[in-house]
Length: 170
Image 1 (cartoon, one colour):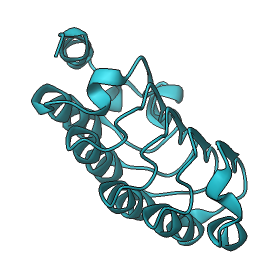
Image 2 (tube, rainbow, N blue to C red):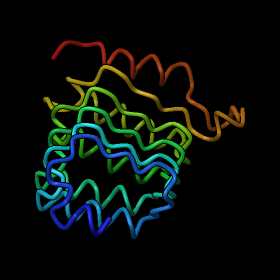
Image 3 (cartoon, rainbow, N blue to C red):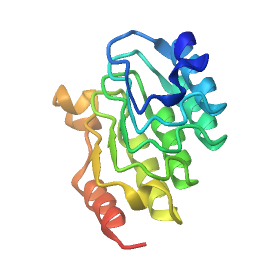
């Protein structure tokens, strides 16, 4: 990550760091560099299976608010450790105009449940623009849903509300 952030990565358009076990600390280095323009050309960012948790999302949201990762179109953060707090922080970032070009978001296989999903629904319904109006593909299957634990899976009413919010024209 440090090499990418030292300027080597400023022309990269696609960055795939899947399965590198970055954790929150490694992801923090990447996001801090992105917040300073180190990954300004990246349109496809994939960090699947890196043990990134809520702290990593918080740092990423701050970098995005600082103008980093503005060109990202495809964001894959599946199979990490992102919980309700992390999904809530990402939701606020998206509602605030972060990731203005985002068309595909994959958050499958994380630790979030109903609370995080509802934060995403609320953020989408209150958003004035940004990613919620450019989003064309969304994957939100949590680990609990994969394990078939219905007590934490998305309920039909939540899914219906979320779809209604996403399908309403700006």
